[in-house]
Length: 440
Image 1: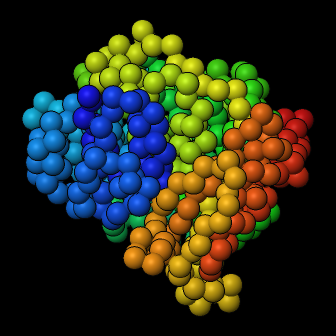
Image 2: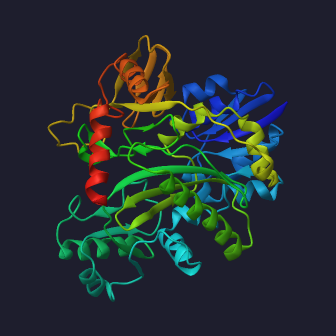
Image 3: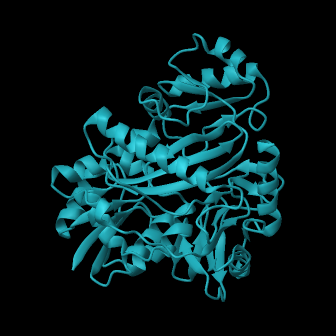
C-alpha cells in the first residue's frame, strides 16, 4: 500500500483526493484546516489543524508512514510546508517556499521572464516606493495594479472595473505599499483568458486541457469578482476561441519558465505550474502563474485523467516524468459552483440574502459533486460564507456537459445561487465573437 498525505480542504482537494483513490493500493490521509466531508469520508484518517503549524503536519506525516505529500492550496506552500517535510525526507508534490514565489510574488515571475527573455510579459514595472509610478502610469493606455504577495485572488485591480482614473491608480499603489514590499504596475490587456494547469518534475512539463474560469459573481459577467463561479473545458482539449498555436505558445512559455527556475535557483520545481494566459492582438501573454491546481479548474481536468494519478505523482517526486505517457479522456466538462446567495457581496448589498444555511442535495444524476466550504452537522450539510459545492458535468459535447451540470446544481436546495450561463452556447459564442473582434 502507498500511504499518501493530502494537505487542503477545498473542492479542489476533494477532486485531488478522489483522483488519488482511483489507485486501489492508495491509502489516503488528510490534513485539513476545516473538515471537508467528502475528503474525510475517503481518508483512512484525517487531522484538523492550521496550515502554518508545520510541526503538526510533520508529526502527522511521520505517524502515518507517509510516502509522499500532495499540497493542495497556496497557503501551506507559502508557509514552507514542503521545506519542512523535506527535512524529514518526505517528498512532496508541490514547490518549496522559495519556488512557490512563482505564485506568491508577482514581481519574481515578471522579472524571471524578463531576465531569461521568455515571451509573454506585458509592459510592466515593479516599484518598492511611489518614486516613478506617476510617470510610468502616463505611458499606459490601460492599467492593472498587482500587490506583490498573496491576496486570495482578490488583490488585483483593473482600470475600468475597480478604478477609473490614473489618480485612483496612484492612490491604490500607495495603499498597497503600506502592507506589501512592492507593487507591480502593468498595461491592461484585452483578449480572452484561459487556465493551463501543467504537471512538472522541474524538467518535463505535461499539460492538462485548457480551462476557462468565470470570476464574476453573476450571469453575463456582471457583479464583483470572486474566487471563481465555475469553468469549462472542451472535448478537443482546446477552447472554442483558441487555436492550437495558442496552446503551443502557452506550453512553450511554461517549459521555459520551469527551466529558468532551475537556472535561477538550482532547484527543480516539482508540482503544478498553472498559468493564467490571455490571447491578445499582440499574441499570447501571461497574466500570472499559480503554484497549485486551480479551484475550480482542477474539477474540470482531474476527472478526465486516464493515467494513474499516484504513478504521475511518484514520477514528479522522482524526476522521471519524461517516462510517463499521460492520457486524458477527450470529453467536455462544465463546473458550476453552488454558493450562498450572499457570496461575494458586501453586507449592505440589497442582493445579499444571507451567507449560509442548510443545503439539501437531491438527485444529481451522473454529475460529480465536490464539497468546498461546508460544515457537516448531525442533521446535514450547512454552507459557510464561501463557495459551497462544485458540480461537474462530463460528456462528449459542451452542450451535454452544461446540461448535466445545470440539472445537478438545480438539485441543490437551500439559500443557494449559481451562475446558470457557464458553459452555455450563448456565453461561449460571446467569447468567440469577442476574440474575432480583437484579432480583426
